[in-house]
Structures are given as C-alpha cells and as structure tokens.
Amino acid sequence: MASVSGYPTVVSRHYQLKQSKLGLGFEETSKSARLPPNHRLRRCSLVYRSGYRPTGMGIEALATGTGGMSSSPWDEKPYDLLPGGKRSYLDEQDVVSFLDPPKELIPLDPDSYNPASYLWKKIGDIPEERRCRLLSVLKPSLIPRVWEVVGTRYQDAKLAKRSSSPLLSLEDDAVEMQEFWSCRTSEGPLPLSWLNDFKKALFRGKDGGTYGRILPGGPIGAGLAKLYSPLYFTARQAVEVMSTEQPCDIAYDFGDGLFLNLKDFPEGFPQPAKHPWPFNDHLVIYIRHVGPGVSVGQAWQEGKELNQVPKKFCGDILMVKDYFVVNS
Image (cartoon, rainbow, N blue to C red):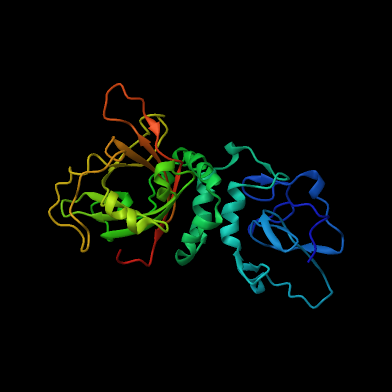
C-alpha cells in the first residue's frame, strides 16, 4: 500500500473524495489533494498512516487491478498490525486523530459542526470492552483538549441532556447501583503522584443520592490506601465551575469526609473517615460528560477560608468506566 504522494489527507467512512471537505471537522490541503491516476481511495476510518505506523488522520490508496487485493470494505480489519504484532484499532485512532490532528490538516470552521457531538459518536463506536484503552492511547497532554472540545456540547440542547453513565445521570430510576471507573490525570500534584492513575467507585445510596470514593492507584496505591482511604464524596448536579464559570454537569464534593449520613454502604466499603489534607480543603471535582462511559473532570482546591484563592488541584482528569468490574 502506498500513501498518496507521501502527504496525509483525510477521508471518513461516510464521505467520498468528491468534495473538498473530507471528514467532519477537517478539509484537505491542496498539496495532498492530487491522487495518482492508477490508484483508488480506500474507505477507511479517520487514520493517517505514515509507513506502517498509524500516527494521525489520512487516507490510503490501493493499486487497482493488480496484486489480487480485495476491494471490498467488508474485508478490512478494524485494526492495523504494528511491528511486533501489536494491534492499533482504527476506532481508537479516530478519537486520537480528532483531538490531535496532523499539521497537514486544516480544521474546518467549528460553527459548521459540533465537535463534542462528533467526539461522542466516535467514542460510542469503540466497544465497551476496549474503551478503557483510551487511557493509554491518549497522551496525558491531550486530556485538557478533551475538556475544551466537550465545552461545545452545551450548544446542542439534546446532547447536553445525555449522560455518560446511568449513575452519573443522577436520576432516581438508575438501574445500576455501582460503577467503577479508571482515571488518569494530565498532571498530578507532586506530593500525590499516585493521582496520575487512580480509580473511583460510584454507588447509589438508599436515600437516593449518588456517592463515590477515590481508590489510590499505581504501583504504590495499596500502601497509600491506608493513609488516604476512604476518600468519599457526594455527587450533585452543577452548572458551572465556580472558579472559572465554565459550564459543567456534575460536581464531586469531598467535604471533610464525615458528612455522609448513610448507614448502609456497598459490601466491602469502609465507614467514612475524616479526609487528610488537602482533600479536606473544600476539594471539588467538576465533571463533563464526554461520551458513553467517558467523562472528563477538573479538580479545584477551593479552600475553607473565605479569603482563600481557589487553585487547580491537579491537571484535567480523563475517566473511563470499567464495564466488567463488579466488585472492588
């Protein structure tokens, strides 16, 4: 397979190269618009290939009439094989490439489409059992970009009402009573490096409220769990981040750790305990729904003192639901 003149361009599963706009959100540069006459375009996902390694968005051209290659898109596999046999799934690369497109692609006017809606659909294309791989395929530096893109979701009234999971809808008729999520920050606070990778558990209380707790992760998470556990919080509806006035959907209030008025907790969950500093310094994590089973958050240490200036507690946080975890 040969790339088109060595330059990347873009084509989606739904668009042909009949238009200058070759994919939702991008258009090709004039330098990459020329195709050799003896090649045809492959209808592929939004993946840019350079040699054998997927690195962004683009198209592939296949020689026609030679080599006995199948021309049916049904014969295409949902992944590329990298050197060493590792698989690079196209649906995951769609998300990566949308958030971090190659320089050769020119983004279209954001007013012509809704980036958050497109991202929501692309995440929905990834099977539930592979969705947690987004934590590894997305560079930590791209997590703030997720928060930024999802900000356009509030421009779509229907999309703004959708939730990334049943419990995070905060509705009384939620079917699931517990959810477990894996999380990664773009930059954790130095004294608390275990926050770069951690887990959270959500559960519905008998009082109808939604609660959760942070589970320290990483190689030293088990040892730190005794120092910081159980780190409970309450989930509530929120419309904006207090410090920035940016829109959001939910807030996780940590309080002092002793404010939970629950008598019954999920099996294996410890009783509430007072939070250690800085979790007891009016820490709040603001949440935005990104797509099915995916959300993004910002943690702010707002302070208990009236004259205390709120500060970002850590980098932005990408959160992905573990669909097959039933106990912690």
